[in-house]
Image (cartoon, rainbow, N blue to C red; front, side, top):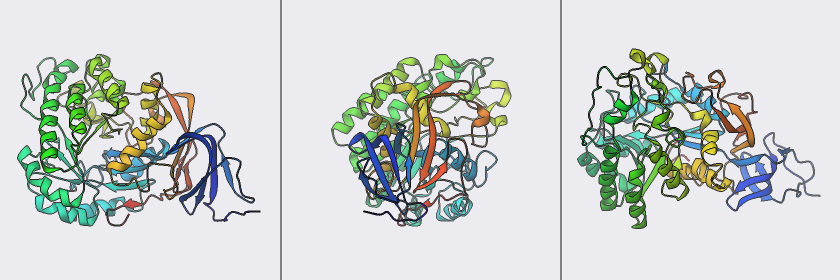
Length: 458
């Protein structure tokens, strides 16, 4: 009789509904030393094997979130590696990629990156990678940052909101892309380009608590013109540009056309753009503030269609928390409040709630939340898919259970969220990181065991 190895983390995870590269199927996933070594028929279990049988719960690859602002070091009172990655584990997320800004120093040179790594080391409950930053004066730092291990770069075409991370011009990006091309790393861009018709940066007193005034200052045109320019640059330099947090559905036709021409362009959107519309936002409700802003229902519907049609590649959170005092600054003034929505723990149920009535497949959900984000970060050879040779990262969840979002159950540092009180389907029952259960549906387990994922050391 065939026998099984006996390491503590060697086991078989079995379900009637496992999402593999071949689709949804009954399967027994064999895990040895933290890796998937085989996918078997569910009844083909060797003698002496530990089996985690989850019945008919959904088993998907661990979620990958490539747009997370951890903020440590320097602004750890906003968020930190411990609380961020605990929340990730509870949300079925087994890999995050940290954004280069809101920490002090920003990750724009190797010295700053080393400070970031020192802060992250020993604190991470999930595997963690890092983006470097492109600012207006650090082009000579890009190659050293890649050598040090960043997975790509992030830039802003508009002020970032923090002084240590300056915006770049289109000319700056034009000069940077020839540096990035031989590195084969993506450039992620916050795509809003000012000025635009009827756009401005100041409030319309005394209506600064009126969301419509804030929305008026960041119209869809500022996204559309930025994306058009970035498509032209990506096509000219044949270098991968990734558009972060798309809010304007009007940009989708030009993205579709660019992809059809083979332009190396990819696009993400975020749960809040798929779930909310501007009509949902009451005066002074600054927990909804983000940039680009949440737009009207027409844009929301267009983004959902773009996702289903494959024009939008992935859904990530742009988890960007701050202290409640900054978020509710000046009594609900949208122009003074910090912009950013914390939702790292909630991405799976939010997206499920949006698409569950539209004939989606679990394979599509896996692509949006796991496979495509892993590919963006260059981690798809080991993350984002249940396949032989990949890390044994799994999220086990119940699609029929619903749960009301209670802020005190959220594990990120601050609990203010526009999702509070909303009832969402899809409850995470367990999260496994490289074969070790790190969340049991109630508690984060054990000690921080996340790896730092550095280019060149993967």
